[in-house]
Length: 80
Image (cartoon, rainbow, N blue to C red; front, side, top):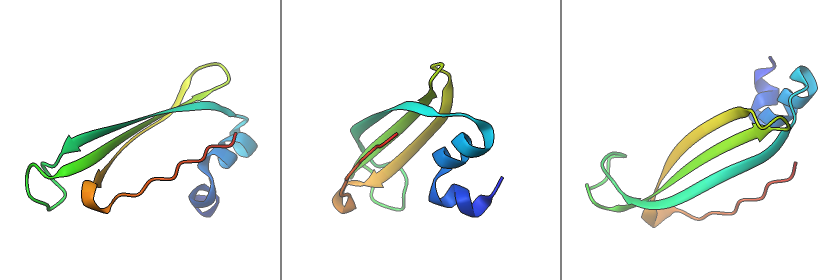
């Protein structure tokens, strides 16, 4: 697998090298409070979980990311 290609678009690599086409993603964004990230406990944070599925509805990817609340700005655009 080409690491540099994955850094540009993992989904494109999955499609071109493995014939796996992402059909949909489901993203859940939730406001939570900090217990890590080197910030004071109880400060606001965003918890973003992403699930990606192929055309057979098989789970292909899962990711979880936590963003500091006072430094977050989101723009999400998905084109498949």
